[in-house]
Length: 266
Image (cartoon, rainbow, N blue to C red; front, side):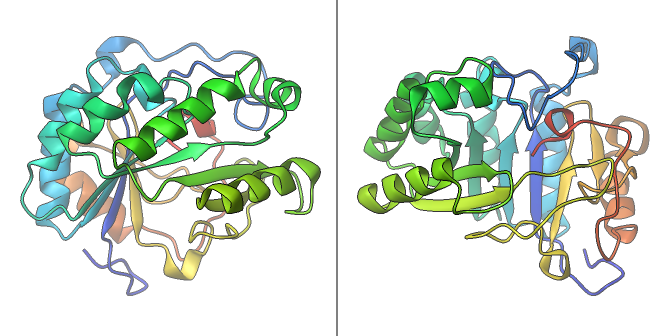
């Protein structure tokens, strides 16, 4: 697939659930949004069908996201289904890390290759305040487990308000250097007003180089995080939905007023 601006679409982010066990202030700052009914969440066989269609159309990389993907029961089964698809070169996951220690071994055995772990602060009190009660010790245990089981390179995602010079960001950068991990710093986004920046240490937010599509947990292919456009795989079929999303991918992000970040897949 090639979008209207000549970008080769080779990356699909798949949200497997809109549920999360944290309430990070930058992701869900308002009133609690009810989760989607389970009947609207794509089954594993439906996700596999979309992935197969995407790979036939040129996708090489898939990343599993949420919400928190490890809240989806039997996620290792899906990982195994996707890992077996011929032509897929990279299968990764973004997680908040709270459940990673318990699942790292199984995910690695199923075929997951690497993980990105959200880590917004090292201080337990600061981490709990940012995430709505999260325990940073469990996240660190998850990072250790991922490394032991070969889910590398482990990358750390740290959300900052304005600058990598903020105290929490400096602490995360120090930890990454000490442990030989890769840190990525993500400026806090505002979907509705179209405020975003390039990710420091990563490729996100760089519109001219964006080659990704997103599949939401309820089966809508979105060409851009900062756009309200989406195409339903259940209504159109996986291939048609993917092709339409690629054909309508905007040159750059503008705004998204229809969804919150947690329900799209960050």
